[in-house]
Length: 472
Image (tube, rainbow, N blue to C red):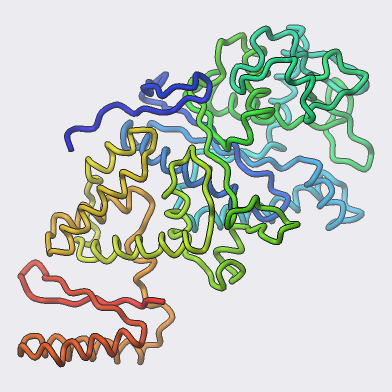
């Protein structure tokens, strides 16, 4: 396959695939927009978590574990959160109530994304812990005449930025005509957006030079990215739906506050997700959360292992739309089982790098499809008894976020049932040694009817061994 070449990424800002050159190879910096934690995160939220975890892993491999800083924020102040807090904690001051709501939902989010095989980001800041930074940015924008006060709000003046709209390709005329832009009399331009808004006594709020209020959505990420990554950093990523207005407005705020040509050099966006061929919505009854998939039997009548969800998300290129279905999960589960069976003879606790071919395919804008082709080839060699192939397959799967034990452990079996299976496996091995293949096949077939699948391999001394697993 040859030595890995440089990482190439599709940059939404330039609409081209570019060589990735970090500002500082000893501190590669990436920011990914996280969820608004007013309820359980839906499976659409899982896609950027998984995709950009893969990129995080790749960057750590290329530049060193200690040389990559990954920030994924938590939005914990929002009108939906306010409404949930008022409903669930009536009578409690709303600043306290929103914290109670978001602590509970954020805890579930962290649990869910961990089950997806993701690494913990370097920093996971909360918006409400960064109000001071937001106010500082707003003060700078007012001072440089990029923002103004009107009707109790502080608004960003889009006319003050001649090249506003580069990321989305929208010009100001498009924004004026767009249905998503609120046309309020106090705005100088209908496309101007809120940096700070007033809070009523019944709403959460913080004291500021512009009165008690709360931040607009976009200023939150500008403040948190600056705090942990600086005024300019390497990669900003998120879902396709965030390009406009969120990411466009982040760029406007950050560039105008700091006087920089860019906010981030590379902008990456994952594609949309639909469920069984339809847009996900509560009205259609197909609104699925990560919690639903991992811990209930709502989708396909069963719970799904997190690593299966991970592979199902990665099987389609991250920039393409994805149709999430039971069939897709079943295909991912079978593929993952095949790889894990092939890697089951890998040397335990061995520390080795992933296969260079796996890395090289990922260097091409995270081309996971071609990565699976490489893994399939290594799996074929491992199933033939190639110990080196089993070892490199195991290392590659671990690198990609897929453990070797999660699907193979018969955790639901009783001790007596496990003993019975082991005895049957030993009888079959004895039959094979005696060349009584009919008896060996009969035992294998009987075990399969009980949901037990066998895999033969040879250990380091050349002795025949058999592993078994439960299959559905």
